[in-house]
Length: 250
Image 1 (spheres, rainbow, N blue to C red):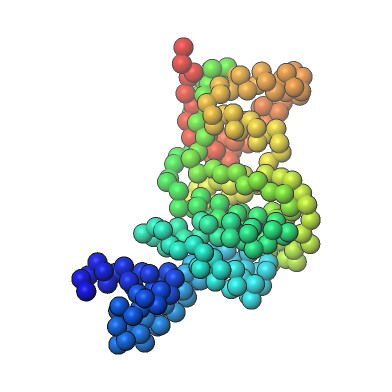
Image 2 (image 1 turned 180 degrees about the horizontal axis):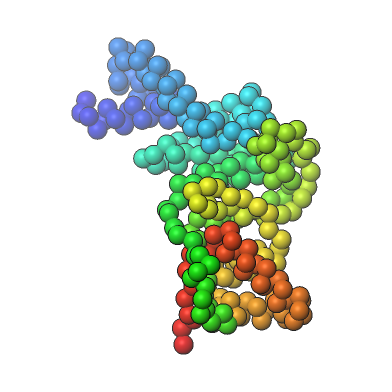
């Protein structure tokens, strides 16, 4: 058996406990294969436990280990780094607990925070860089680390309580959107109201700040619209969400 065939059979046994592959590897390899399989699965469980600590705390040891085992059976690693293995776990939880959306949503919050932490670095805009900006034509460039987590339950409140070692509330329906980003090498998260979420989507899509302001004024009136847009801008800069300001073309 050449090296490539050996590797293929070992992979087939690890991913699906393929008995045909195990037979080709030989009877002498059987004890070692069992040890290797146990170590392989234990390592994947450890990855999931490290990435989803609050999800683990929410559903308990037995339920989490069952979910991890189901995930390992359904979703083999597909990346060179085990850090990427966590990415599909929320979908497995959604499949396992279709009537308990809070479980998958807590996991999505944790996944977004983890992905944000390892995203590429960026430098946020400082107040000193805001001089002489023509706001009507300004294009705000949003930090590449931001992510939005769509929620249909109070998963954010549950997650927050678990992180703070407090008693979490019971799960209940609640539509909201969580913004996740990194600021000064720390992960941040907060809930967005619907208008700010839509505004961030438009800004990230390249809309000029002046055009955004015009749209907000059309909806809320001159005074409230200007106040909202100004409040958002101040918050985005303070949160480190803006990395550059460019002039609109033309």
